[in-house]
Length: 210
Ligand code: DC
Image 1 (cartoon, rainbow, N blue to C red):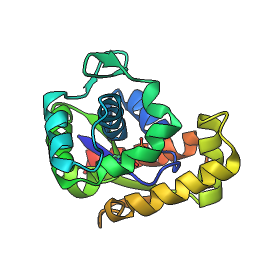
Image 2: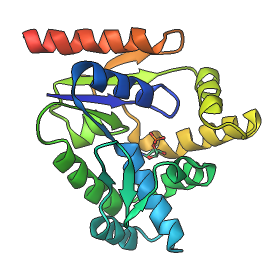
Image 3: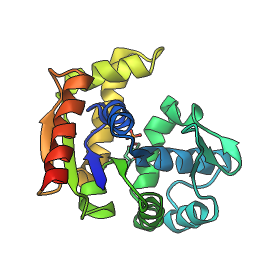
Image 4: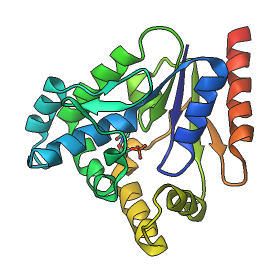
């Protein structure tokens, strides 16, 4: 079974998807980490982030690997923490917007999500990567709440800078952020992680029973 969890930055996707995967003993696939890792490698090599075809080639040549501990590797380097830096937050939408890059990523994501039960987190999982996912969820939260959550993830960055980054990323990501027609929308603003996980778990159970 595939559980697709989409939504904007700060809506709670990662925390919820990880907790859900653990609860259900499903695998967990973080597709945002894949775009982040590619962005990291492209910047590390000094490539032009506007060159879609060259970036797609890089993505094909240097596939992102998740090890058994869930650490993220690209080009032989463990980039688990570097991909969460603000400079990556800022540049990843520039890389993610290229169609040829998305095509390579989509194939790799399908490959990684193919066997067994998996929770896949991203922006276009329910619409493009896994349109046949058995359960589709679209998480949203109001912007102030999302900015607050980001602050907890990014200590050392000011509130104003974070709010501006979030708004800019929303705008850049917007074209890929349409919920699937058959996704269940959950507003996580006033909910804790446990509440959200339970709601999705109930959807999984409904689906398993059907
Ligand atoms: O979820 P995140 O913040 O780690 O995602 C990082 C970036 O990658 C985000 O700006 C949008 C992009 N992304 C995407 O375009 N498609 C996905 N399936 C996942 C992430």
